[in-house]
Amino acid sequence: MRIFTSPAVRYLLRCSVLFLLVLGQAGWAMSIRELRALERLQPKQGADFAVYYLVGTMEATVYLDEASVRAGAAPRLCLNGRRLEPAMALSIYKSELRRNADLYEADMPVSLVMFNALATVYPC
Image (cartoon, rainbow, N blue to C red; front, side, top):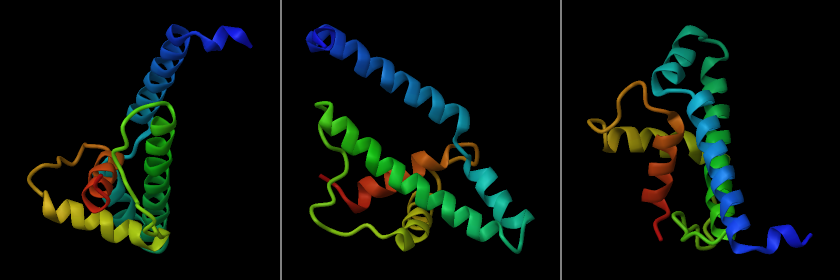
């Protein structure tokens, strides 16, 4: 379709998608406080659920960065052929919280912590 070949239309589409992603992220992202409560309030399965959430957040962060690079933005995460295993999600997240304990408040989204952690571990 020729309608999507115009640079202005592509720019508007990118901005719309980015806006929807940010809006969705802000509305549905789990906070640090909620993740800690999940671990604490459900002793049998809470820790497993938290790890699953962190793995999903890690994979989504990498995917969104790759999508933005395909759309023409500069990369913010560079794996450079290094592997990113699901088992690494919890340790990367907790290391970032320890490293910058005074930076994060309990109501900040887990996805923000994960992005900052991945940007520290895999800088460009």
